[in-house]
Image 1: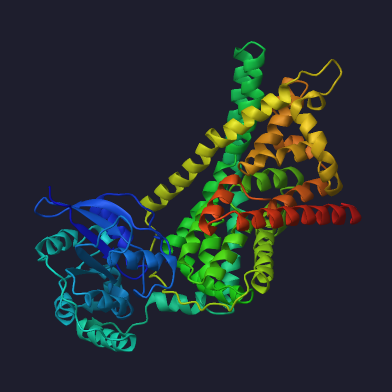
Image 2: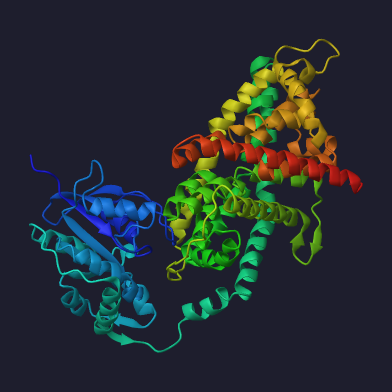
Length: 612
């Protein structure tokens, strides 16, 4: 039986390799408009014009075979047949960005020097034409000595020609070409580019005009933080009507269960445990969708990489580089992909520092906690034209997490991860209009992850907590929380947390929150539902319960705790895998717990001193 041939896609970041891979294999894979997304090889099945199936590999973006980061190391090992369990590819497809040809030709020449069967996919020719650049693929092919096929991967243009070119390549032993150094390759790339350009418009493009503004060292950061401010205002202002609908639906469902089921264990489990607990988390789905919609649009338009470029100066001040910004920004969704994205950071001390501070970024799991507390204790008033107080407080909490991360990074880079700051080079992607289909798919995937957590981790934690709150049953006149196993656990922990303003319900909620941050909300909702003396109290919204029971200093202390709160167990497990041991995850847990306790206490004591 003959071995299936292997074709590998190689090239610089942002050349469109993942888009090409998706179209050629039919696979669905994340396509993001910034470097460092593909940090492991991806494999799929492609069929040649002859009907022969081949294995197609999507390799991480690289600038050279002299690997400077873990993702470039993956590419080098696969291309040279050094990756365990992966033989050397039979064919190499070099993917070039037609609108940034000179830069991409530097690495392309290094690939072609290997003398292996090679095809060049001149990708994104539509964007080059949009900017007034007309290229001659035949002239480029003659200069490089390999077939060149113009493509537009996202629109499936030129893919049949590319497959045909791969099919027509003769296979044989490599015939390496003379090696030239980097300086010579850059000079040759410049000459080849000039020869391949048929015409070039002299008009100033919209892209260059935008970059003059968005990358301005003074105006750019103001625009970036202004955009983030608008995002957090929208999270409250736009989501409120949808939250009201979901709250109304959960209250109606709880009322229906009460009206149709006889009183007893099962009905209490459904109303006090599942509906009160899980429902209190699901209600914040609109806010999470709005937050991710903004993030996805920033990625798809090409603005995200520019935000990283702007942040390089600030990151350099704490010993990091702008390359750390993208993993940290990914951590706003979840610290797990953020930690994994640090593989694109070449310097090991930079990478370790970024892993250790990634949990301080305010992940989406914190949003339900923030939203319910802010809505309960902060009035829905405006503090200026179009500026809501609730959105302003949410923005301040996100900023607190960012400032905390930078300060921790500064301390780490001066102590346990000390070293010289690494340089930062980033290729800025082309501006593009986001594709509605890709945005909808991205939003659905993130909403599904959130709902799946609500139906698995949060569901299980809520049921366990409800059982601990329900048994043993209280004697007549005794409070159920006092009598329950959960109440006894909280009573043991309470002396530790009482000095920073936590009541028993808050103390109890931070234990299951180690499974997932959102469980803190479900825990509070379940606790108050079990304590409720009548059905009306059971069905009331959690924020109403908090508004009636918590003082402002207590609520602010709880918010401060979750700015720094120790990460969920899944994040700790990923940190252990990425650092190859338990030493650094334990350090991470220790400093996060200490910061959470100290700043919750400072917040509580300060609020009391100010008479809030």
